[in-house]
Image: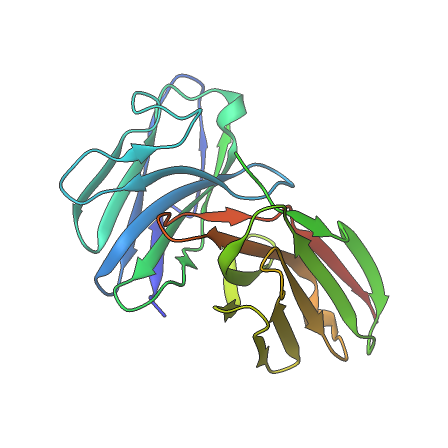
Length: 114
Length: 112
C-alpha cells in the first residue's frame, strides 16, 4: 500500500482566511482524491485531482472555494478558501495505486474555523 | 452525495463476542472495500472484495461480497478493545465509473 502524508495535521483558522493542505505519496499513483468528513459523518468526495489539468469537482463543490493542484503523480494540494465555521471538518487525501483498484487514505487534516 | 446504507449504526458489545455488520444498496457493485477509522486518524483499508460470493479474511476479520452484488458483510470474531472505531464500507459501481461510494458507517464500542 502507498504511504500518504498530509500537512498540516491540524489547524485553527480565522473566518475569511484560506488554508492550503498538502498531500504527498511515497510512490506514483494513478488517481488522487480529496474528501471531506464532517464531525460524526461519513466521507464525501470533494474532487478528483488530475495531473496537469483542472480537477473534477463533485456536485456542491466548486473550484473557487476548493482550488486543487496536482503537479505530478505523487503530490497534490487542496486549498479551502474564504473559510467559515461551516468548513470545520477533517480533510482527507486518498490515492489509488498504479497496480490496483483499492483506495488508500492519508491521516487527514483536522480544520477548525473560528 | 450518494451513500450506502450501513447497519447497525452503532453497537456496544462485550469483549470476546463476535460482531456482524452489513452494507446494502439498490445498486449493483463490482468492488467492495471495508475500512476502519480510529479517532483522529484516516480510514485504514481492511479488506477488498472483487467478485460476487467472494469470502476474504484478514486475521479475525472476514468480509463477504453478496451474491446479488448489492450488499456486503463484515464479521469480526472474538472482539478485543482495540476493535473500537468506525467501520466504513465503500462500493464501486460497474464498469465506467472509478469512484467509490461510502457507507454511513458503523460505530463499534467494545466493553471490556
